[in-house]
Length: 282
Image 1 (cartoon, rainbow, N blue to C red):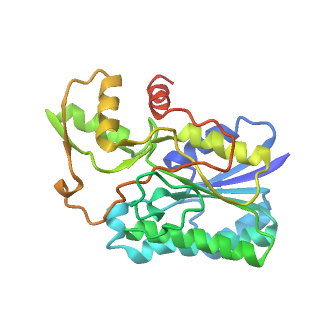
Image 2: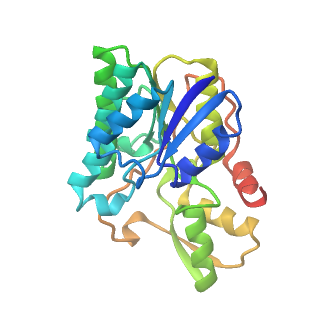
Image 3: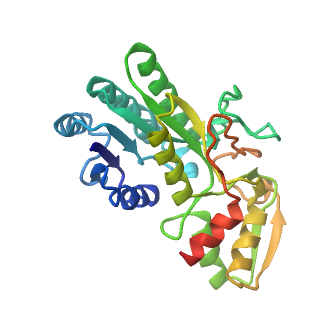
């Protein structure tokens, strides 16, 4: 029986991750919320993980407030970079495989054809992306110096029926507004949390080699098209206006093109709208 530790169990991804693995009799699961184990408390994290000595550490924690990160640089780098470095060091010492999630925001967004895992356009437009990229590099640096095995899984536009995400935001706004203005010049692919978790489990079961992996549902769309489909599936009759990124004044810049392409696995990526439908009926 393998032992898994899940960090960030109260977040959208962490909660779903726990629900998925706790049902599997092949794993012994330990999970921690931020209140139970704050990843910025380096000594406590080290002592806790040493006691458990897990086979896998799945880090579902992150500072994801993209706009707020512009004015909270220190906190963003503490959570997304320095704490990740600490986790990588501990995993190396314990011979624990480190599973970490990153983002499409590590890219500049200039490539209209999307991004493969080895694309070198690593020029984030905002603090959030820079802090996540730094976390990636820390993991790779530790691995180069030690026996650390890891999966860095970049994903994008994560959605679920629980938690704060674009799908739930649109549903909430549609209840109180007569029309919505949605950006139509940023392109990527939505990712259903349960599909991301299945992909994570697939990497573990197939024992893929250490490295960076990309996962999203298939199909490249704009936020505008995403919003239209959300309302269509839920029979919401509301006017949705396509607008440019300049329509909204935000603290952080976003990449225009961030479609993630998986070239390293044979996992089947289902189409995003099929996953969206399941999100509402499951």
